[in-house]
Amino acid sequence: MYDLNLIKSISQPSLQKIVLLVMDGLGGLPHPETGKTELETAVKPNLDLLTAMGICGLTDPVGPGITPGSAPGHLAIFGYDPIEFNVGRGILEAVGIDFELKPGDVATRGNFCTIDAEGLVTDRRAGRISTEKCIELCRLLDGIKIQNATIFIQPVKEHRFIAVFRGPGLSAEASDSDPQQTGVPAKPVTALIPAANTMADVANEFISQARIRLAPYSPANSLLLRGFSQHPHFPSMTEIYKIKAAAIASYPMYRGLARLVGMQVLKTGSTIAEEFETLARHYKNFDFFFVHIKGTDAAGEDGDFKRKVNIIEEVDRELPRIVGLRPDVIVVTGDHSSPAMIKGHSWHPVPSLLYSKICRPDQETAFSETACLYGGLGRIPATALMPLAMANALKLTKFGA
Image (tube, rainbow, N blue to C red; front, side):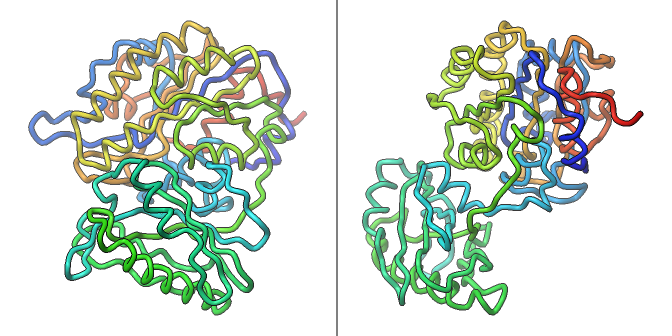
């Protein structure tokens, strides 16, 4: 891992521009019928051309064998040690939808889910209900009071919502209720330290009351909570890297994460084309852009191999809009792997590429897991991507005498 104080000490402003394109859950596994991953199956001439002009490799978001969540995966890409700067999902979602947090608030991310008559979780995402339905269900639950706490429920997108617990003596050191699998019951929320006993009691009572209210609304007849957290303080990317950074993301959690590290979040549409258009429209105003593509991860988690391939191909078709702006550095990577074969996040290293006019190209000509295995970047920690991007943008001075 890189020391942020070291990077801060050698960072310098420059006119060069960096575009960081993150295809969420990018890495995959071979389909049993073809022996090819989603990335290897996709027809992607523009990504392949960028690879041929650049250098590629594999990145580990946290470490070999460690399956990362979205927050640590992205923090690593931004150059932050994901272990030192760990943050719960709840805060990210809350900040992402501009919820006004107060000191002492505990936020958690929620999923509406489906349970059967025995209380077993049959669908962790309630069939990905519409955002309109999510709004309706949030109104049923918003404002529940338990002991001395008030629970605020706000919609995020599709089946996702935030729950913010406000009251005296609440601690974020509580476990998730989400079992992260189906066919089993939801977990009880437990206190990880004695000071969180009240938080666990309030959360469990809230879940019980919510199930009663949601019972008639199958498939969204229950809920799961994860990522209990309170507002942290991170050094900003502007402070560390001396850049003017912008974030383009359609999902609230990623906008929240970008805000926590000091990026300006730009208003954008939800399609890939709209996100790339937002980049073009604001290109003169910033020297660093984080562009987030969610669809690859959603398709992988759904086990939809073909849809993930289609989204990669859609990114490739739109990529000339970024390349045509002639940024000095383009990085394409993912925050983790989400193979459709296992329907979730995995520990597999992530294919990554870096293009710049002054990089040292390797011999690889296709962007894929196999090519990246042999690429010139090798297998590196994801925290190395920002220093490499900065160096290729001539934004780092010499270290030492």
